[in-house]
Image (cartoon, rainbow over all chains, first blue to last red; front, side, top):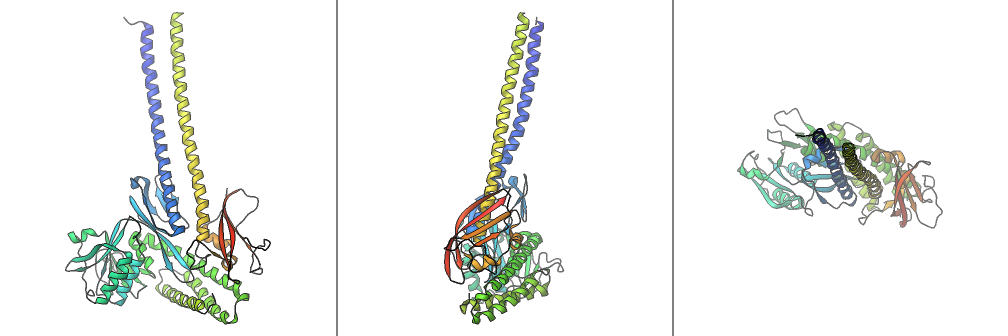
Amino acid sequence: MLSVFQLFKIIFGIVFSAFVLITIMRFSFSYTDIGESSQQAAVLIGFRKVINDVYTTGIPGDYSINNVNDVIMRYRPPDIISAITPLSIEPMTVLMVPGEDMGVYRNEYDLGWYSFYYMEVLPKMNVLINPLNATESVWDTAKNVVSAFPSTENIYTKVKFGFGCRNSYPFNDENWERERFEDSILAWAEVSGEYNNLSVCPLDTPAMDYFDDRITISPAFTVVDGILVVPMDGDTGYIYPDTSDPMLKYFYKNPIDVVSFFLGGDEFYNYTNKKFLNELKFAATLKINEINVLRPNMGTDCVGHYQELEGMLNAIKTLAAQDYRNQASMLSLNEMIKESVSKYKEIGDEGCD
Amino acid sequence: MKGQAHILEYFFLTFFVLMVIVLVAIFLTAYQSMTSGSLQSEYETQDTMFMLKTFSNYPILNKRGYKEGSMFEDSKLTAATCGDMETIFGTGWFAEIIAKDSMAEKECTVNDYPLCNKWTFCKVSGEDFQAFEVPVNIYRKTTRVVSAGILRVGFYD
């Protein structure tokens, strides 16, 4: 027969053990959550550091994130949206598609007196370029668009290319990364003349399984799967994201607009345009100020050249403040940029720089 | 008496076990707090270092065609203003570039150029900050000479 004291000991032991167990379990759950969050924060900080280093050095790199969907929910420029907190990557311009293994690359749009740096953080990707009824502007556009992708020859995470199609088959090779594809393959395809009448690539065939996505380039509007690019010349034209709606189109003024749209739709297109035009205005303002600083020390032969350049830069500042979807403004901007690049080169050739 | 002693034993045992659990919980929480604190500090340091590297390599301020690291152009530094730079880099930071040449330190303005050797952006006196310095090259456009200098970049607390 149990005594009262023995009964007390049993009941007290059970209650106390339950209390200790529940306390430890609750504490360990919250500690695990905090530990996971700290780990994710460390991964994101390390990721941002790699992007920073590639931006400042220009040397491409790779970065891997295990269970990337747990760490990065999505990229909404300029913030990486994570489970913990949004992480801003300003002031860099970054085009990112999250993946477990990503290549980090700094690309450059060179305007002579100014270079626009933008980052591409992309997973492994195979892109099909589909030129239809190829004219000179179609081939130029194809080469320009490819040049706006990263060159992954020196990193592990590859972006590869192919083009097509003939008899429903694309042309592709494991070695066709940007440099080789742009300088050799596309250049040869244009010069040979044998690939000017390629057809629309089919959607779901085994040969097409190699590619993750496609960009179709055609001199006229045509219904295709994926993005359609209709060039006006090598640099400008219209992007049709969905050819079932021919009224939905976006004007592009340089190949970065096309690649931005390809990677992230109108969200990336709007983001890149705002960043580029903002930096262009800033660069033009700074260059004008620099010309004013240097004017007292310029040789008389150089004053006239710099005056012309200053006029062009003032026009660029005004045009860069216009709506980037306005075709007329952006065509004028492109024209003025080309003139300023040419004038800047002339200044250098004259020894005035 | 014996019964009371037994009960007291249990209370003491209970008390000590609870104390151990509480101490372990405090220790783990403090450790986690320290780790978060050091992550925060690492993040702030990274911010400052990134600002330093970006500023020193920013193409708008650098001489074109110089591939081995960075080389500021003195005319570009003189032309830039704090307001201009804040449109790109945001606020809450400052930068100073000082060319180490034979001249006494003199702040550069449009009127003093090129007989000056110090450029300051967005510096506010009396505020606490964390800053880093690196050596840099500065190309003197009028004399076509390269001077060595120091770039100091900091964030205000």
